[in-house]
Length: 135
Image (tube, rainbow, N blue to C red; front, side, top):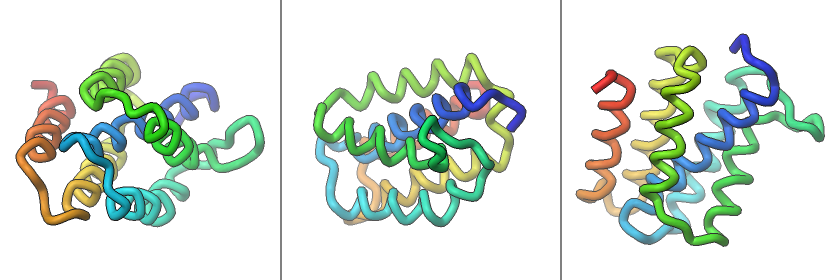
């Protein structure tokens, strides 16, 4: 990703908000959803690039940090989705097809981690797909 570390850190923070929005789509974040996110961060996101935060830690951990912080805040998933969508529209070049695919995969894993996908999660997944397709 040919962007500054500041933009890449923000990228990962916005992903944390998006993934929280997905987990919170049904108004409850379940332990299985949190564990699935942690698994996906380690499996897919840590190797995406070499961006570091101000502490020299892989910037992808910002996903987890923001997600955990949002759990304490208990905010509105719709607002977090909108924040992600605005960032996507402003910095679309960061989002290669590989990155979009990883985002959709992680969202799908979160949605499927507890008793399959429910209606609110399916709607959010469809909105994300539409955002990526420019609809």
